[in-house]
Amino acid sequence: MSHATLIWPHVPTDDFKDFAARFRPVFDTIREGAAARDRDRQLPYEAVALLRDSGFGKLRVPKSFGGFGTSLTTLFALLTELAEADSNLTQILRGHFGFIEIVLPHTNADWSHRWLTLAGQGALFAPAHTEPGDSQQGTFSTVVTGDGDAIELNGTKYYTTGALYVDWIHVTANRGDEAVTVLVPTKAEGVTIVDDWDGFGQPLTASGTTTFKGVAITEADIQPAAGRASHVPSVYQLIHLATLSGIGRAAVRETVDYLSKRRRTYAHGNADRAQQDPQILQVVGDVLAKVYGANTATLSAAAASQRFFDKLTTHVATEADRASLEIEVYQAQVTTATQVLEATTALFGGLGASALSQTRGLDRFWRNARAIASHNPLIYRSRQIGDFAVNDADPPRMFSLPLEPKPEKKRVASDVPRRRYS
Image 1: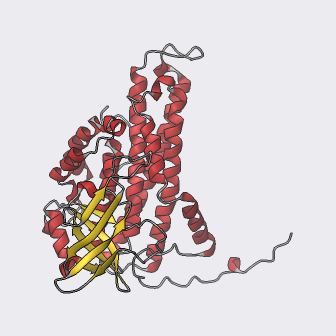
Image 2 (image 1 turned 45 degrees about the vertical axis):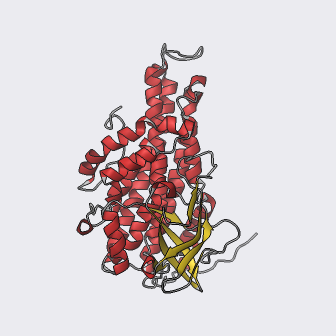
Image 3 (image 1 turned 180 degrees about the vertical axis):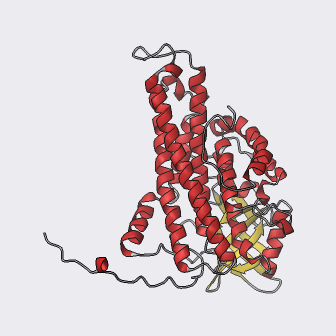
């Protein structure tokens, strides 16, 4: 099926068409083995290498550092298409693109300059932030100790998504009372990466355990963790939404392909062939509409993220802007996750038992969507959206410094508390 067969939201950027033409052949190659990789748990080393060699990891790296310098809107649109090919790949690169956004607003700093230069040369990065056990927000059992020529990193991280496939891991740790970020080569002595992620969805992302035992580092590898750019949390979330949107697209595409080849129909069917049955066509239409809505929500929030980034880099972004962006992303998250989960369930309503074949692997769409949607539970997002709307309560800040204060909300007559009667 061609990319033009199904109608998806228009991407409103000048460079999207050119980048899509560049990377779609890569996506098509990745798509060819996606079902088999999922079924047989074949880790996608070759697919990651294809993306590296094509320069996909350089999309947001400035041209002055050897990258393409594209917008967040274009990035998320392309990540959606990559997820349509194989959603594991988009999640594998989530930590990479998140790290680029951490350093991108500080291109004049030596630390950022070093990592952007490496990224422009093709280096890929993975995250190591979450820890097993009862760690508290902002403190880590992973620690940096020593000084001078005797600095080392020790600790254990989980959900180190993509670490098996990349060159560097960005690790959050404590150095005394200070939270820091440390960059460590994945092949460094003392680094052990274990593929022990056993979730039923996104099985190839290597979202498992990484341990650091006496890993030698230098002062140049260390940067204070506080103060990362305020748009980074929304970027990390939007990559999940692009992944969900791509899963939805793939589910529709393979459902349509399955029905177009199906020769049998049902005893109670309305036509000689399933593809002519109006009730089955209605199922396909409903699923497609849900996925279209999810893609629209994701793309709209992606554009909002780019607008905020533009304000951030020109030093005019405020705390109110940050709060509005995160709430818009939360709204897109609830919409996208809900619609894609419903779509990947509903598609089986008109397909019949043969659609359950493990060879076809249609179940992977719901499994993978369920895995992505579980990372940030929707119950909290819905509550935060409601709290913002009713009480003007800002969403919590994650690992970034405050911007300009949010303007005080003027009290109007409708804000005056009213007596409630039972």
